[in-house]
Amino acid sequence: MQSVTDLPFMRVIARRGGPDWFVTEFFRVHPASKPDRYILRSIRENTTGIPIFAQIIGSDADAMVKEAKLLLRENIAGIDLNLGCPSPTVCGKSAGGGLLRNPNEIDRMIGMLRDAIPTRFTVKTRVGYADEGEFEKLLEIFRKHAIDGLTIHGRTVADRYQTPVRPHCVARAVATLACPVIANGNVVNATAGVNYHARTGARGLMIGRGAIRNPWIFDQLRAHYQGSAAPQPRARDLLAYIEDLYAELARESKEFHEIHHIQRMKKTMLYIVQGLGDEFEQAMRRMRTEAEFFDLCRSALDHDGLLPDVPPEQSKLFCGFTELLTSP
Image 1 (cartoon, rainbow, N blue to C red):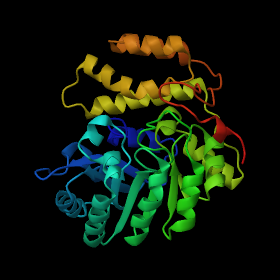
Image 2: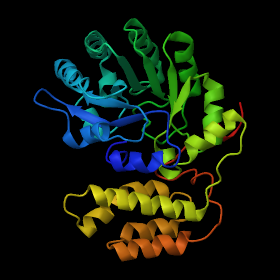
Image 3: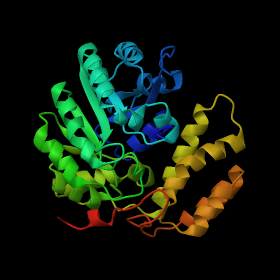
């Protein structure tokens, strides 16, 4: 996730189990671009032992091929094309999810990238721009170019993050494509992940927001499939996660400015605090100093109580996940 899942975050989450592979923040590509140096560090300084895919986003097919060839020189597991970002700024440039409005250009771009990428080439998409009826044509394009994997966020771009996901669309892709299909969206806890997987037959799950809020979710899912005891994080575990992330981000700062660092932490904390109460969230938004920040976190989390398993159903960041909490 842009501006959140960077190198410090990867280090911190890997210490708590981590995913089977990482995907970088997206490299923004245009005709004059070169790979972003900060995002490149997520690749070059990734000492977690977890493979990493380089994610690219843009609207110029020739520039995308050029950037992909540069990234192939790095120690990456493959190249991932972002066709799912719903940001109005990104979509306004006909990139990310905005490109779904032009399937002919997607066809051309994926064809060019497939020809240029001899290693693994994967795509992340939504089920359409405005309507899931667009999905069938997209599947034809993905099948035509023999991509190596497809991650599907089960909403349209217009849905943003405000609706339930559509497991039937993911299941349709599983039935249609020869490559592995990964289900994404609304995996707020291990139960939601298990049920999403069961309803779709997907090869696996991609987890973004849910993992920021609960970095133990990967090990909780592994425990389910292995039939072992799952981690049960407590408030002090969450406090240690916050302290670890604060320190890692501070270590990355060329010049440490307390107020800027607090603002950076808030980008991640807005996900972490979901389910901890409105008062905590509102107080977090007002923090300006390190002392205020840690006084708030420690007063709320320095105890051994179990953490809430799910966020509020209709928060601004997590919506429409209730149906995934029920077994199919």
